[in-house]
Image 1 (cartoon, each protein chain N blue to C red):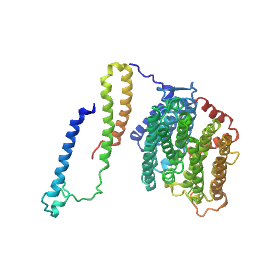
Image 2: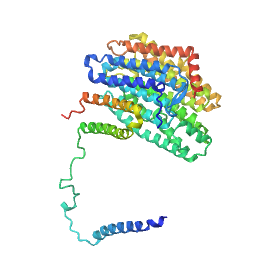
Image 3: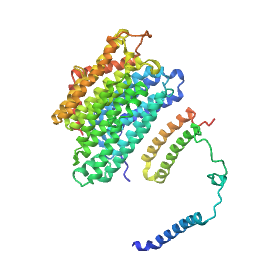
Length: 479
Length: 118
C-alpha cells in the first residue's frame, strides 16, 4: 500500500491560519469579557505567521497528487488574501468593540474564509476548488449576518445564503458536465483531454457555461449580481470591505486557472462570453452607482463595476491581461478596504450614518482623514498618480494588444462615468458645510495603521509599480 | 439474455395491474356513504387542523447538526479501523489529527452550552 506524501510546505499558510482560527474559537468561549481585546491581535498574529510561510520562495510544483498547486501564481494570491484579511482585522478592531461583536468567532470566521480563498487559488482540481469555495462561502454567510440584532444584517445573510447556495448548484452541475465530457476533474487532465482527446464538445460547452454562471454569481458579474447591493449594504462594514476584495480575487483566480489552463483549447470562443459579461458588469455597476445616495450601497455598485474592469483583462486572454488582473486585484485590495475603513468610522455606532450626506464637512472636522479618503477615491476613480490609474492602464493596454477595441471603448467610457460619483465624496467633504453638530470622530490605532498601509500601497503602486508588476508577471510564468 | 427477465416483467405487470384494478373497481362500483367526519383527512385520530406555523426550538437544529457531525466521524472511523494495520503509524497520526480537529469543535460547543437542553 502506497501512502501519500504529505507536502506540508504547500499548505503551511493554510495550516497556520487554521490553528489560529481554532485558538480564536477557544478564546471565544474561555476568555472573559475583559480579555476580548486580545482577539484582533491574535487574529493578526495568525495572518503574520501565515504570511511568513506564504512568502517563503519555493520551487513551483503541484502536490497532493496533482490537486494542489504551489506555484508563484498561488503565492501571489495567498499574499494578496492575507493582506486583505490583515487590513480587515485592523479596521474591525474598534468596530467590533463598538458593535459588541468582538467575539473570537468573528475573527475565526475571517481566518477560515481566508483559508477557503487560498484553497480556491491553489486548487488545480475542480473538487478542491469547490471545497475552497464552500469554506469561503459558508464563512461569509455567517459573517454577513454577524450583527444579528440588525434586521438588514439578517436579511443580507439570508439572501446571500439562498442565492449563494443556488449558484453553487450551477457551479457543481457545470463541473459534473465537464467531468462527464472529459473524464477528469483535475485541470491538467481536462486540458489534456480537450487538446488531444475527443471530448463531447456539447457537454463541455454547456458545462463551461454553467461553470461561468456559478463563478459569475460569486464574483457578482452582471446579470448575476442582484444579491450584491443588499448583501453589501446589510453586512457589517468591515465584512463588506472583506467581501468586496478577497473573495472576488479568489473567484478570478479560479476563472484564470479554469479558462486559461483547461478549457482554453476548446473550439468555442469563451473570451466572447467573458467580454459580454465584462461590458455588462462595468456598465450596470457604474450606472447604478450614479444614482445612489447611500455611500455603502454606492461602494457596493462600484465594486461590481471594478470586477467588470478586472474581467476586461481576462477577456484579453493574453499574458499581459492576466498579470494586469493580478495587479488590479492587489491595488483594489489596498484602496477599497481603506475606503471602507473610513466609511466605518463616519458611519458611527450602529451604522446609522452611511449616506453620502454624512460625509458633509468631513474635511473640516477631520482634515487628515479627508485627505486620505480623497486619495483613496481618486485611486478608485483611476486618476494618476494613484495606483488605480496604473491598474486600469495595464488592463486597457492588454485589451488593445488583444485587438478588443470595443471592450476598451466600453471600459474607458465607464471610467469616465465612475469619476463622477467618486468625486461626489470630495464634493461632500470639502464643499458643503455640516448641517448638524456631532461629537468629533477619532480614528483608532487599528484604523490608522490600516490607512497607512492602504495609502502606502496606493501611492507606491501608483508611482513605481515595477516590482509588483514583475511579481504579477512572474506569477504567470510558473503556471 | 433479456429473455430470462420476461417472467419477472409479467409478474410486475400482474402485480401492478391487480393493485390498480382493485382501487379503480372499488371507487367505481363500491357503495359511497359520505359524511363530514369521514371525508376529513385521517391523521391517527388527532384533529388534522392546526397552525402550520408552529415554532420549533432552535435547540433541535443544533442537536441535529452536531449529530450529523459526529456521525460522519464514526463513518470515517470504521473503515480506518479495518485497515489500521496496513496504514501503520501514518494512518494513526492522520486519524488523531482528524479527531483532534473534531475535539476542538466538541470543546467549543460544550463550553458554548449547545449540549445543555435546559
